[in-house]
Length: 352
Image (cartoon, rainbow, N blue to C red; front, side):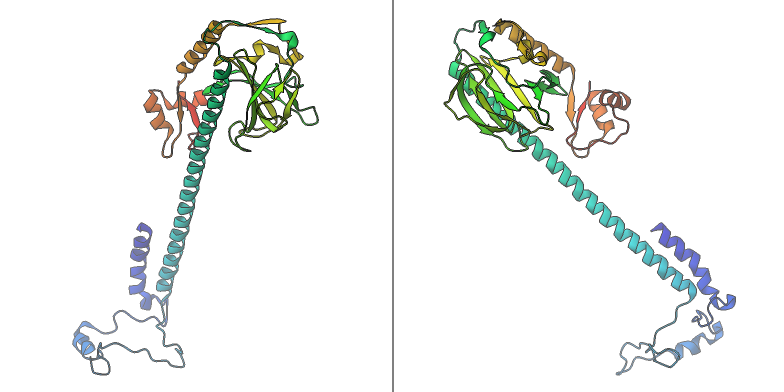
């Protein structure tokens, strides 16, 4: 708006003095007669008649002006050109702003949908694991002694791509064994047991295809992100029997096996039982102590409570989040390794 006003103020003197400066020979003069002839000029104005009720001026088509159009001065043409350019810029800006708004709404919606699906998938798995726990849980919680000589490594992989423990802002309850291209991806039962659950959560949702085994002594194991399974609910397996083929289904960024162990509802770090990198068990007799498991869980929960996390929502900025948690923007960027102030909806930030 300021630009338009500036152009008009700049052009007004040019229009007034166009005739004297010779900027446009055919320009229509704004003042053609002296003040004394003002009455005469008014008397010559077209009168309102029956044929011309509004007293309007008709443009006559001539040889010099075949379209009957009024010729514009150079200054007036310049003004029209500038106004046209400004209007085009405004339209382009509006289109870009609308496109950005739609993109942000789409991204925010995708993040919200992804988060909801993730929570739903986790809830499904938790319910399945709880059902498997109750099937063989002992009312008197006591230590379990495992004969590891009768066990089997669940995979031929010797590479841990994701250890048990805290991952970003939540617990990773199992061990991820990376499955490289060209190697044997067969997944087998770690202990003798019965198939109590098979589920497919989707190609890009949750744990994808997974199988849960109940080993009859309060111990359950989970085998997730399979490309397919070769068992059905009710099958009885021995240690080393094939469950399926490892893959990349579910919320996964590469082929791997997600392997979990639980005893009466308490999670076990599988790497305390199996030496995955060397392809063997750690001890011939392994004691699973529920008291030690609970103490380990309490430790992780205490560590998680030390670190507060915030999931970015639409309209958030670093300043707003920093004020919420009583820290500086600089510290917030340091905690999250941010080099700029740009954040996106759905991003999780560590705030302490």
